[in-house]
Length: 221
Image 1 (spheres, one colour):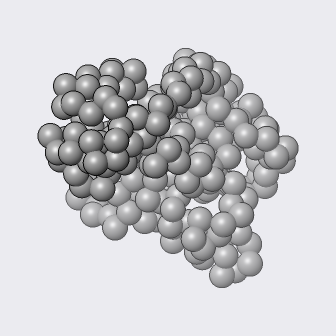
Image 2 (cartoon, rainbow, N blue to C red):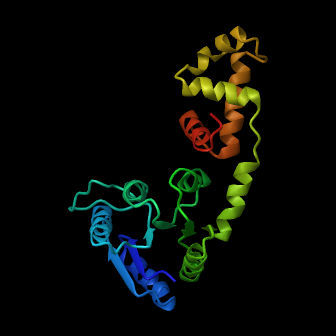
Image 3 (tube, rainbow, N blue to C red):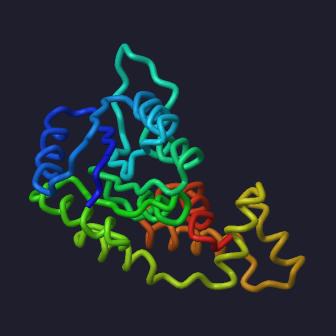
C-alpha cells in the first residue's frame, strides 16, 4: 500500500473523511494542504529530499480567499505536478460529474482514478486507492454509465467537417460556402444549424465552443 500521500482539499470536513479512509488502509504518512500552491511546494520539497510522494488526492475546485494563489484549481495543480513528477499517481476527489470534464483528466493528464463526492464516498475512495495501488484505473460506478452514454454518439463525416471549420475560426453562417466549395451535401445553412443543434442537445452543451472543446479532447478534430 502507498506509504506517502499528498492531499489537496480546501474543505476541512472532506479532509477528515479522506483522513479516515487513509487510516483504515494503514497509510503511514499523509500531508493535508488547503491550497494548490502549497501542494506543489510540498511535492517539490519531497522530491529534493529524495522522499517523493506516491499519490496525490485532489479536488478540482478551490474557493478563493485572502490567500491569493498562482495555481487556481485541481486541473492546473495536476498539470504542474506531472511536469515535475510524471510517475506520481493521481486520484481526483470531486463533486464534478460531467463526462466532458472527467474524460480529459484521464486522456490529457493521465490521472489514475476519479471519485465523485457523494454518499459512501469514503468507502469508494478506499477502493479507488486500492485499485490505483494495484495498477488499475478507477472511476466511480455512478459515472461509468454517463461516460459510456456520452461515447455512444458516432460522429459523421459531415459533423466532423462543420466542427472542424468552426474550430478553424469560420463563422457558422459562412460554413455553407466551404461545404459547396468541397462539393459536400447538404450544404445549406439550415442543415448546418440543425446538425449543430442536434449535437449540442446530444451532449448537453449550450454553446458551439463547448462542442469544439469536447471534440478536441477526444481527438475527433
